[in-house]
Image (tube, rainbow, N blue to C red; front, side, top):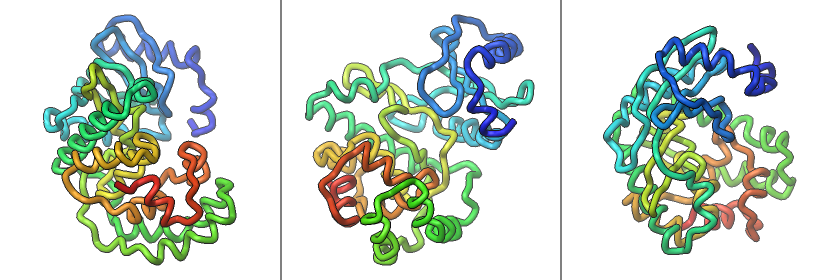
Length: 289
């Protein structure tokens, strides 16, 4: 199955396979697909979640499985307990615990400034603990080569995503000016955003969706938190960094924003509008604390 064929499948097409898989696993309960997510994910009653991986994403099963095992009980925020993982009917699957709480994506707009700071601080604490966990075997095999490869095609990728010329013309000089060095690599979730966090009564009650995890530089982790969580709110970002317990260089984070495997600066600028006119100003607006 190609990526295009997978994306064309709707819930009606998937449901028989889901029912067969749950029968195979001996799991029962009301089955409901979550609306969000790049992969099909179903709640099964109040206790279970099953995540499906088409053939083009089978390699991500091992990542999700191994990272869930590595972080279980190691973070100050709950993560799903792994129940089973494997292949069935040509698809990969991960069966895990269903966590409680509401999506922070839905809750965040209604939080006052103090509550946003408190939640952000908790996220920072969770990231600090995550980055102390010994990573299971994860890519990329060579971080320096990954950075070189991402750098080589960076401008053309952003051009293909319709980034405005005034930003495109700054990228090469900006990247030349940022020394990414030889960073310590940590276990990075890489997509810690409001959509992947649960909250209840002001406390984080869940962090999930570990299939994009990597061994990465610390700053790579803060691309998602700056764009899809704190969204340019300096006080919230400062609280997140305070919770993390160490300084994070905003220029390095913006460099990794440009080099990220899913980087789309034009989209990010629509998500988090800015008055910045230079990449240095943008780094400070999105990631400064």
